[in-house]
Length: 326
Image 1 (cartoon, one colour):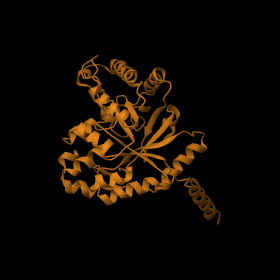
Image 2 (tube, helix red, strand yellow):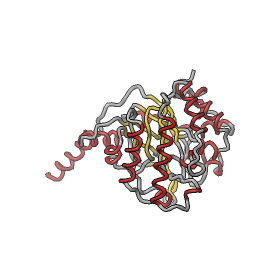
Image 3 (cartoon, helix red, strand yellow):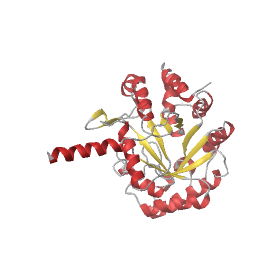
Image 4 (cartoon, one colour):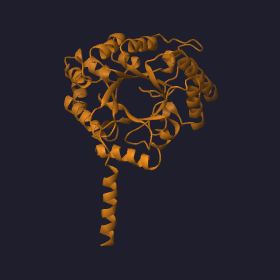
């Protein structure tokens, strides 16, 4: 009898943790990466312009990948980001700009070739230089609403070969530098929705962003769906609130393209659609709408644009509805 009572109490507590207000009006955005657009063989400027003008996106997350930003040591090239941010300014689009070695896109940690011969201590100095130069260059833009420092920095189980072990003291230096150069804007820290503990990103950042990937591929397990519901994410938020970590939170990366064992461009379209069909895209959007996040950024806009050229405009058309394109 006591055992059943204890089990009942545990179930009741678990249920209570999932109770959280779900917003009725969600603000949507997308991530955009020239790196990803190039992988798909796109004219990245046309893709970017279409996302803003045709889809009507008003929130966008950009990344200042180190190799693109500093192609030669001490020689910065901000032309790509200048084009993107100018376009955002002209169309009243809010920007999250990510800086750091670890930013969205495989292999997660991005280093310019000229830096490969340096030791880790020297690289860290160089990373601070590049972050400082980037923030100083763009902090005058009214489009930028927050800075993202690194991406899923505490997710040690992913991309460890390229990223190596996290140095938290160095991460703090990166954050301190951004705050010193631009104290007016918040720092966004991100973590995995399914595997991240969320606690440390809340400690380091002003705003927290979670990723959300329901359908994944693993070399041992194959293609699968995580056995979780929206309440999983509501409960994690409630637990952090109870622990005293109430901070603004956003869904910074909602998977809206397939997770594949190789590059999208090297995968038959039929396989891509079987992994992220329009039904799964709708499922992801519906699932995310019940997780309690008022602001949600989708990952996959470059793919939707590319699919149009492959005879599948339905993803782009679905996005038009989501973003309220006129």
